[in-house]
Image (cartoon, rainbow, N blue to C red; front, side):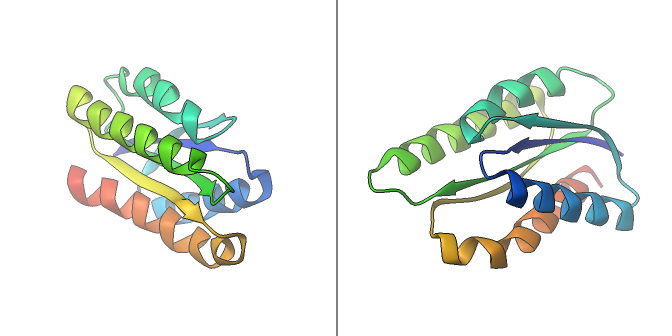
Amino acid sequence: MKIVIICGEFHKEEAERMIGYAIDEAKMNKVEIVEIIKVPGAMETPLALDRALKDDSIDGAVVLGIIEKGETKHGQVIGQAVTNSILDLQIKHDKPIGLGIIGPGAKAQHIDSRLESHSRSAVNAVYTMVE
C-alpha cells in the first residue's frame, strides 16, 4: 500500500511531530509513504492533495495540520472549506483520505495532547479503507 502525507505547517514544530507519528504508524502497518508534501497551512492542503491523488500508484492519503481557535470565525470557515474539499477529492479520486487536522477551534493548551492520536488515526483510517 502506498500513500502520501500532506501537512499544513503553519504550526511548524507541531506539524513535524505529527508527521513523525504518522510515519511511525505507517511503518507499523507496513504502509509505504511515497511522498511527504508540506504546504503553508490547512487551506493549501486540498490543492496538494488533488495533485497527489492523480498518481495512479497512490492508494490513499493522509492530511495533517492544525486549525487553532482565533478571535473570529476565520478558523471555522477555513476548517469547513478544507473538510468539504477533502471529502469531494476522496469521492473524485475514489481513494481514502485520513483526516488528521486538529480543529477547527483547537485551543493552544489542547493541541499537544492531540498530535499523536490525530496523526495515527488518520493513517489507520486509510489503511483500513484500502485493506
